[in-house]
Image (cartoon, rainbow, N blue to C red):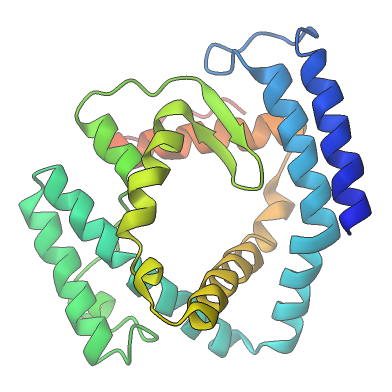
Length: 228
């Protein structure tokens, strides 16, 4: 695995040296040469590590248990949701998400059961990148981050304050904190396995366009026109 990462990282550096190679220019992706190099690096790491681990996890974990884990981490995600709701002055949504956190953390057994959904408290998603977008900070170019995947200049900047909003960061016991981080990554990757069958055409382009459209929908609530 280490040898694969070293070879891939070296290839990435070589690709960055020829970043000027020609691509059909996309208005949201002026850094496409660099982004494709990082994308290829991520794909190699995923194929050799993250994907096999995720498949193994899905193989040994019953679907109901896997859903409990997904719900648990979703409940933790209500904390940054609430903070970003307040930063956007979205009082009604902040109340909804606070209600979800309280109900699911108690009646829902630490969030493993989404009881709140059944009493009309719908699930939302917010992060600091969306908060900046709410306050008219420009999205900036599309950007693929090593290991983290698709983003934009705005969303990548928002990851820093988002990391401080994550309750896992404040778990005192280091082994427990690290185990939670790893479990969250594995659970998220496992959840993406089925969606791979939906990818059409060039994988890089499909993921880029889907990501940009989804972020726009999260920000505005309006479904953009399908370009595929």
